[in-house]
Length: 366
Image (cartoon, rainbow, N blue to C red):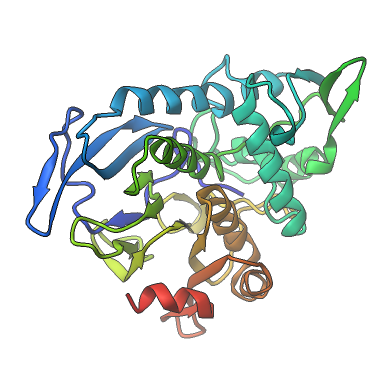
């Protein structure tokens, strides 16, 4: 189902407002003629990609170390590339795993494996809302197709029998959280069932950094982790943050944009298949795996950009949309509250077309 690159996927959204032009991990505050407030730019590595953060504050305080630690704490719970992470322990051939609290973390004061439990809860909600098109249990298939944590490999021959053997392991219904004898336990119906939060954890990381900045009293910022973005307030020019949606072509440069939007107090994530794929006997196999068929999804949808209040939601629905295709995705998004979509697809002539919800047109007009 999912875009895999050493934890996650190649960035698709680029921040036009000079987001990726600076490389210093010890940024200096910037002054702008339109504002007397200093802007700080932080850049670093996390989740197999890079992050870019800009914020404006009077204090000029640099939060790099605290943010790095926060993101590391998240990875130590949800990264399949860290053997000792919570999710890696669950993915071992065991049928049960004790949790420190309920999957509804708001009802628990226990902070142990809190990041895992939050991701699990959101992933389960989106699984149910999308009728299983978003399914974090697809990891065995992702590994088989060579896009998972077992290492990227190109299949020389597709074994449909092997795919059929793996399909019974797929489905969030194969997990169950039970409270018994004073503790919560996560049960798997089969010891080989595995979880993968790569389609929502980057978005979750964005949200957690935003929460951190809000707690520090910062009102104007954007946070970008590998192309998943959330912006609050305005940029130093008192305008919404400008975000470019990449042109979904194999030969398109990272600076080639299909359109640019103005983002303010919203999160946005994009998913696409046009960069991460390989060919077998002339047939392209991309990293978006359909959990219902077990095969890489093939439809006319080239990229899906989702707008939501939280980045983890935008992240998850962007992936689900790629699996569902244009019509099903648009039908679902239009029914959901506070979620908008911008879809780029190929028509019967092979030409790129766009389709978007009414709410998305508002940020296009900025």
